[in-house]
Length: 276
Ligand code: MF3
Ligand code: CO
Ligand code: CO
Image 1: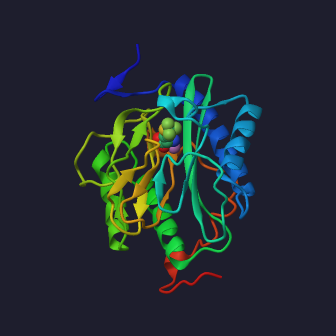
Image 2 (image 1 turned 30 degrees about the vertical axis):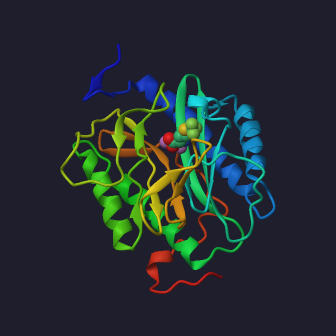
């Protein structure tokens, strides 16, 4: 059977190659999605595009029918934290949208998401998006053998709260492989030195959801859509990560920049940033 440490699967070389393969496809689909995000399209348009791109690559969209989720993609606009259901909503300039892609390919899952700017962002949209993007990078930077799971959450929480944002507690990153959601649970808040030790061969997601206001949320009547309780903006980025012998590998790393997302590389290098 499979080797597990603290109930977390340690993947074999063969399993790791399967993870690399599916994650590369998911990353590619996210890059393609970025190219179509624009004012005037609907979240249904994005979902249909994801279905077509996923199938073109020979993969399946894992969210479809997962625990009853009705669509292939999660599309989370503005105050939607996660699990937004694609529908007839038309995107307009100033919106931010997270598109979350999970592919299933040869029995393995690859999970990645990004927040995109639709047209011209407001200053507050830029802030929550750029804080969220940096939180993911800081969380990933903690990943190496011997580090603790709590180191990841601590790094994310410190940065987000230091910039006046809050970190969602109710949804966490997760182990991933033949199962979409497995152990460990990867909290995006926490304390250094706490939690299980990371070991080479573990694969899990880091996917901080960052709010401009309170971290509290509520679920809409569709039983999926998570929105901020105070209606404030929320942004999220997600990668699937492998713990390696000497650090980590971002399995869903992209081979090119993301259109409509990576627009402000120097955001934190300036005291005041105003939209173009
Ligand atoms: N992709 C999401 C995650 O990052 C999970 C979506 S579950 C679904 O874990 F049912 F909404 F698809
Ligand atoms: Co995930
Ligand atoms: Co996801």
